[in-house]
Each structure stands twice: as structure tokens, then as C-alpha cells.
Image 1: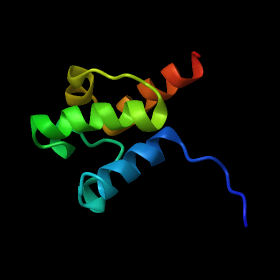
Image 2: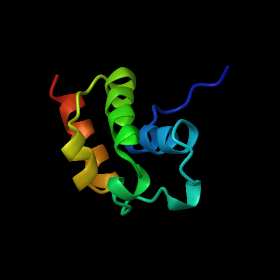
Image 3: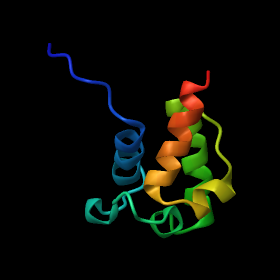
Image 4: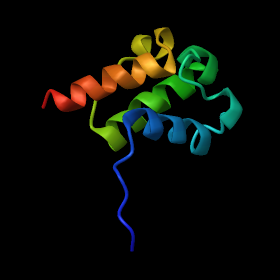
Length: 83
């Protein structure tokens, strides 16, 4: 078994978008707006729940809609390290 560096929050969220939410990988860029990646309100709610389950950080739906992928990941990362 090999050990690798832990994934960044940006990597984890990007992977969730592609694998769970079936966003085309070429659309998942740091400067992409989350509202463009999560195309309906159900996806936004599901992502908020998934981020809480996977990363242990509660996020608001407005936060998801208003941020870029990189900005959202940075916000989640900051709250993870505040613990």
C-alpha cells in the first residue's frame, strides 16, 4: 500500500462535483461559479449536505451559489482548520 499526501479541499470538492453530481470534468475549474456547476436547487442542497458529511463543515446554500469553486473551497478549508 502506498501513502500519498492528503487531498486538498479543492480536490475533494472537485471530485464530488464530477463523481456524485456528474458535472463534466472539463467544467470543474477553480474560477467556475458554483451556481453554474450546481444547476438546480436540489443539487445545491445535496452539495451542502455532502460537504458536511465528507468534510465536517456546515455550509449555507447562499454561500454555495455565490462563490467560485476556489473561493468556496478556501472558505471550507478555513473553517476546517479553525477547529
